[in-house]
Length: 123
Image (cartoon, rainbow, N blue to C red):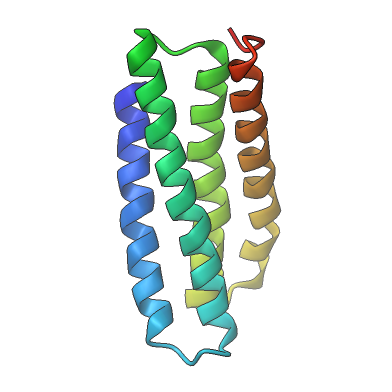
């Protein structure tokens, strides 16, 4: 599980840097640039969060239920949130924007799981 989280973090970080670079070459007011920047920001923040979850799980010797929930929600939420924004920005396929809130909910659940785990409620 820890390796999967680290792989997801690496992919998210890579795609975030790539989308940020693409956004930097688009017009500042361009809708696509804004979508790419938002996806890059959330992707990079949650790549770091996934690394943190993996580090805590490794330190403890095994992941708790709260960390498993957080890691899965961060990985899945980032895929749904950031990739849907990247796809919308690069293709203009509007229905991809309907997926974005599902990813946002996943990210919120991930942060709630971290909080529960911090208070020993996720073990």
